[in-house]
Image (cartoon, rainbow, N blue to C red; front, top):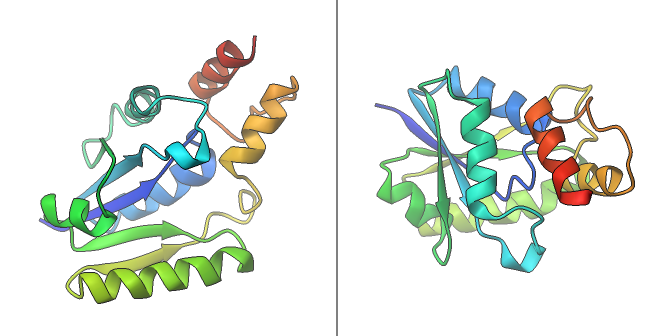
Length: 159
C-alpha cells in the first residue's frame, strides 16, 4: 500500500488544501492529513476541531484520513504510518525557498521518504488559511475559499 502524509496546520481547511488532497489521493492508496498542533502559529481552531473539519469534508473518501500530532518530526510521523512520501503545497515563489530547505532536511533525515510538491489550481493559488481567518474575522465572505461547514465554524469563532 502506497501511503503519503500531508502535514500542516490546516487552520482552517481551505479549497486549496482540498484540491491538493484530492489530487494526492488519486496517486496514492492512502493520504494521511497530519494536523500539527502548531502552538507557535497560535491556531484559531484546536487540533480536534481541525480534525473534525477535515473528517467531515472527506467522510465519503476512504483514501483520506486525518491524524493529529505534536512534539515529533514529520518524518517520524511518516515512518510510524509506513508512508513513502510527504506531500507539500506550493502557492508562490516565496514558499519555494522554505519548502526546498525543508525537503532537503527531510531527505537527510529520511532518505527513503520522498517529498512531493503540488501547486493548487490557479484559481486557488492565492488562498491561505491566515488570509481566510482575517477575512472571516472582519465579517468578509469566505465562501469562495472554504467549504460551507468551515464557513459555519469560522462564523461561530468570530461571533
